[in-house]
Length: 567
Image (cartoon, rainbow, N blue to C red; front, side, top):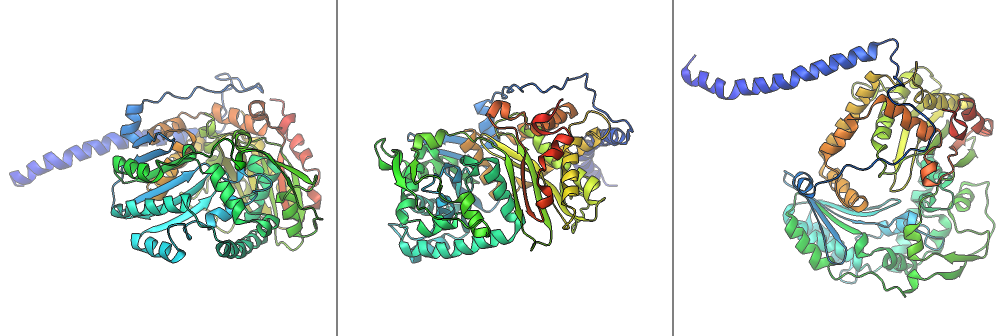
């Protein structure tokens, strides 16, 4: 061997080998430790380390943030004089991502504006006061990349993936469609037709409409219970004036975040100042912010049809001919109030019976959100058609305990909806007709098992596996610039800053079995309402052959869940 080759190996190969060994040895040691823990026959949680009780859980103080460290790890955040916030993160690659996030969504709608958010995202990137629809399309094509607009319960998002040099042009287009939409009658009529088809498609698929109905029942007549889909009744009567009023009321500078990935922060701030810097909130005396009496159209609802059910759940209230439209201050500060309840839709045309069972979950600001997210990964689940595999959750509880044992169950999976001041957590499943009551028993039993401290409870091995899956899922998703973009924009919108991914992973790693049981009991015992004012009741929604599910709440009492829990 020549001296040059030997020297090269010494300089390059050996240091790499030493680093690999330093990483591999502790990793193998941890894997062996976790494997041994998962094979223990009596893998119980030591309750003496932290007593579990059904007392109100006090809020944990958030970890203090150092602004200098935050800027170096996750980019920068600048607030303009009028309240618009600009957030950027550096990123390697040949393209950038740009987004504008408006703190406006279906939770801020009232009886007169129900469904506006749904139609508003469809009217994005149409004609404006400065561009015809043809000019808008030509400018978008000239800018390259792709654009999209979507609405959720708490945000309306304008996003684009593009080449870095096209960012100024794209931000100009976004500012134009946000601030100067033409909103012509022709465009609205077109969206009425396409939205109508979309609504019909949702109603034809229980797995799509039932999560929507779950929110409506869980937050009856308030905030998060407002529909994402525009009710058919409102779709027919909505005018361009209604949409313009909604925009003028909610598109305020302090509710807007401009987010960019892979772009120079100072340049984005300068562009935002140029395009949004003169934006002002409506004056206090404007019509949109003062309550006004409106007469709602009255009429009978056909509860026997899906359209009638949709109107009765989502349409304008007909209990009184007078509807008082709340003002901006009332709607913007109205907290989500969890009510719970049951909705069973008898439909013998469905090949399966679908069932959702849920409780009030945790808000994004709750420190226990990391344990609850881990619990969702631990429960996992999926469809019997795709029976899992390595890395697909085949060892999750709902695969191991449910899908692998009952061939009459078509699907079973956990869900976790998280919002700024509340959430929904539970299990959804579907089965062949005739097995509805057994499916309910299986779902409730799986929820109850996570609250145990003894046999059948959460083992250390499955907890470690769930934490690893959650961390890897977060990190791998953030490899996508569009995911990274939305994560940055929404976090700055909700928190005012971006939680560093290192801090997030560290908090996931700190989750213990005691934490998991405590959080499971807090959620499935209805204790979240002690702090939020929620009812603590269970929410049950089903479609198919559901007559046998009447009185389903008694099954939860049988397993000691809900407000009757005696931990």
